[in-house]
Length: 493
Image 1: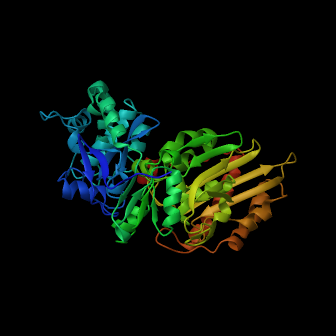
Image 2 (image 1 turned 30 degrees about the vertical axis):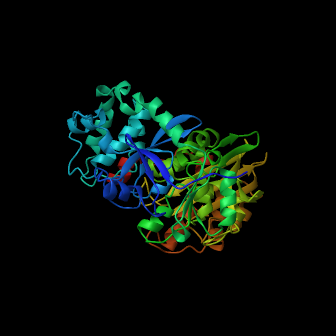
Image 3 (image 1 turned 45 degrees about the vertical axis):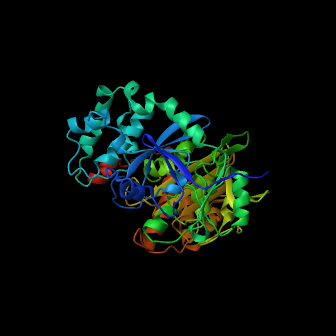
């Protein structure tokens, strides 16, 4: 079947339709807003998706429903916006200068100090308010994980978030009242054509669907695949790398499907952390804390589970947990598919079992057996929005005599790839699950891992953490109620 081609990117920016034919693959939304459109309420801070000063909302249709999410404009590429609706802080106030309820709450609670971070906080709270008009304190803090205030105005900002419900009315909010009109506009923009702009290293492509993507990649096996851009975005903003030609995927609905089967859960490679969260937590409640500590809200809205696996980072948050669950990676090249156990997908640092022209299409995660003891732990310098120093997963099944029948222990941050602790597993298997067995197994970590020292952690620290996490997991399986510092105690002692 012949694919029709369009040579332009089309999206809504606030209340205007934008159509562009000259979009470089590396152009960020932040640069476009500030330099081209002079919309300078969106600020540039870190340029790596950490501080939230550049937060905007992007609305997209999925299964006919329009959903808005906060994203980092600094690492979001313009090329990924086709068929979407970008909303900046300038769109919130009324034409007569009347502030939006979220903005008014920031004023009334004196939540803005130097003001640099304020637009980003406003947009994050706006996104939260639209989805949850009456959030509790935990939901507010989660929504603001990706926003940094160097003036330490957090208490006032949280008071602003709590007060929005008292002064706001969702029925008067423009994104709510005009949702039907915006939906109709976005449906018109979604014409089912492949988007192709530029040539050579300056080319960007948006396939029609996953079959078209397979065809595009088969013809251009050296192209850079960009889904959420939470990693690739930094290649551009921090390392000034040329990444073209680029194939963008965030618009492909068929890569965002979640299937709950009899034998397990299947996530399309384009499923974001945010979209995966409800079903992940329902089937694997042990992953709740880990999932809530992957980046900030903006990163979870953009980043994909498939991308986290495909990149093969030794400090990626999800691979150790998925190894523990026995997940498999579905790879596709053209019309051909194959499945690889996720632990075998990672070959060595920077190398995965993925041929040129092949891509990660889905992740299949089997359900846990009722006998399985399972735990996941992330250790990082900051509690929220930080890269792992060590991430450990433990899965133990016991027989009727209380002996270890099977053991899967996997770590990130301990080697050049996410890796199983095979010597520790062997030491545990067949032994009684008790403290003596744990202490006999602990020395085997030195046989499994020779970690590196870097700015996140020393080699000695990483090895000690791995040993202590096994001890912690054992105690928790025995019902010990171990005290964990909350974010306030961790910050202030």
